[in-house]
Each structure stands twice: as C-alpha cells, then as structure tokens.
Image (tube, rainbow, N blue to C red; front, side, top):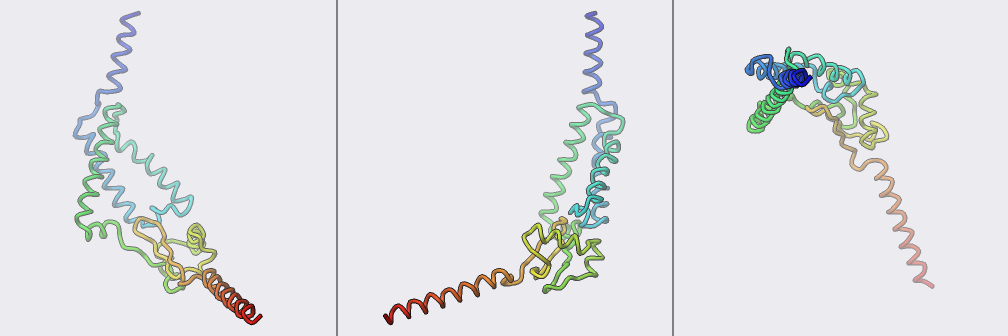
Length: 198
C-alpha cells in the first residue's frame, strides 16, 4: 500500500514538473507563435483589436485556443507552462522596450491612425477600408457620450483599435446652454435696472 502511494506520488510529481520536450523547444514555440500573432493581427487590421462586434471577439477567443497546442506542444507539465509563460512575458517586455526606443518602428508595427470623421463629415471610404460600419461608429460615439454623429467634429480609429472622438466647438448642447445663460444674465440686468428706478 505504502509503495503504491509512493509510486503514485512520484509519477504525479514527474508529470507535473518534468519537461517532456527540450527546454529550447519550449522557449522557441511561444516566441514563434507570438511573432505570428503580432504579424497576423497587424495584417487583420485595427478592427480586430477593437473587438467592435461579437464575431471579432469570437475570433480572438478561438485564436487563443487554436494556438495553445502550438505553444505547449506535447508537454502539459507545470514547469513547461511556467517556462512558456515566462518566455512570452520576457519577449513582450523586450519588444515593448525596444519599440519604445524606436518610435518609427513602433508606428510601422502598429500602423497609423485612420480618420473616420473629418470636419463633421463621415468618410465612408475610410470606414470601408477599415471594415467599420456606420452603425458601429455610432455605437462607439454613443458610448463616449455623443447623441449622434452630428455632434462629432472628428473621429479617429487609433492603432490600438479604439475610436477617439472630438466634439464640435462648442457642441450644440453647450451652445444652447451658453445662449440661455446669456439671456438669463440680460434678464437679471434688466430686473436690476427696473428695481433701480423704483
């Protein structure tokens, strides 16, 4: 009984912590997948990073599951998982540090921002190029507090996939508020003038 438990414990320990593939392979696999995903997402466009619709989200989620076996190979050990994750974190840290020191290369990797609305006009050719529908643009504007695209002066799809909006100066609601305040000030001055007469 004791020997059986000891053997079971030793087998479990071996399965959990002993690598079944060489260390170099365990480190190379995540690096190759990392480079592939960076290039693939760059080619797929900024829209994939923004997760603008459920289809993009499903693609990103299944993508992580699809490349899982490519990263871990035939090794399911804890040591292998820690080694693979550590490699990914280290490579990402080095890439981010390197790109921070080389802004032009970072721009090449991330791409440029795309203007979707300019001077209050929706640029439909740019929407089509970035595969963003007008409805998706309106939803993104609503999330940032705009009632409609009529209030937007400029909208930009950033390299990271987010959409930034700039309002007309001033936005219609603020303009109405300012006009109302000016009228109230005029009424207050008129009241003060009338009271001064009596």
